[in-house]
Amino acid sequence: MSNVKNEKNNAALESIKAGLKSLAFPLVAIIISIFVAVFFVMWAKGYSILQYFSALSNLFSIIWSGSFGDARKTMATLEYVTPLIFTGVAHAIAFKTGLFNIGVEGQFIMGMIAAAAIGVIPGLSPVIHVPLIIFGGILAGGLWAAIPGYLKAKVGTNEVINTIMMNYIGMYLANWIILRSPLAVKGKASTPLIQKSAELFRFNDLSRANISIFIGIAFALLAYWILWKSTTGYELRAVGINPYGAEYGGISIAKNTILAMVLSGAIAGVGGATHVAGIFHQAQDFMGFPGFGFDGIAVALLAKSNPIGCIASAVLFGALNSSSKMLQLNGIPKQIVYLIQSIVIIFVATDYIVKYFTEKKKKEAMING
Image (tube, rainbow, N blue to C red; front, side):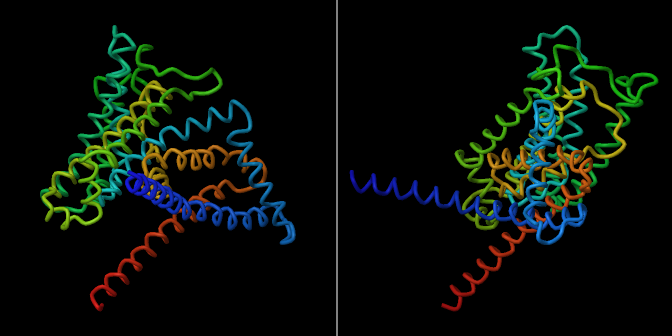
């Protein structure tokens, strides 16, 4: 009995160590990115090199006050954070299966259109209408992602190219629906406002922040459970780590490739659906991509493709985006935000490069040994 307990304790300690080790590199990346960004703040504000810590304090205080300074700013930050949770988790699932789903942007848009169409149905109870919108987002995003997933699995085409093309097809299809379909409103570049029964509850009248953030957290937890606590997740991760080894063990590469894309697209679709149900209450003409799908790549990379880590990562990127106006008002270029994000991504990517060469060295040592 004591041996069993010791083994369990050792296993728990090892998992804690592994968790802390996985967090170390992203934290270092964030610290270094801020360290570098401070030099640009010094340049913009005219600080001397001896005033480095004053510039650092200035940057932190502005970012904090611009994102969490009062109730209104905190709620505005949650507006940025919520869609990033969905898109970050969507990318994390694809990454874990060895896929690069650039089409999260288009899948997010398909979720928005599904919500706009389902939301105008009259005479429904909120108990039915809201879940129906969420299901519509799952279906629209999942089906849109299934197309490049099927082409990747059955034909062998590159999912990056296919998903990029699907983004543009999705955006132009959405614009046709908004402007020229029976759902279009004459004289307006938007769909009709959704029914009150389809609207998600907002926290207050100060902003459009709503309960969709809890839906996003729930989907992040569900994605974590699927990836690490289920047989399906084990197969997805096995295909991501070594597809041919997984296939040798009886796991279908094709099936799991399609499944990963569908799951990724479904979560992105829910993000788009809740964005309409909670924020806009209608779909508006897309002059360009919303951008949440592309930002989700950075969220997933920083979180090391951990769905729960995507929540914290989304808060960071959401706070940076939310504080950009405050930075500009204080004489600091808002591009500082993009600089910090870029440096974070570079250092996180460096970790993958280091791992690649470390594993390569181990394999060479095993072959030579």
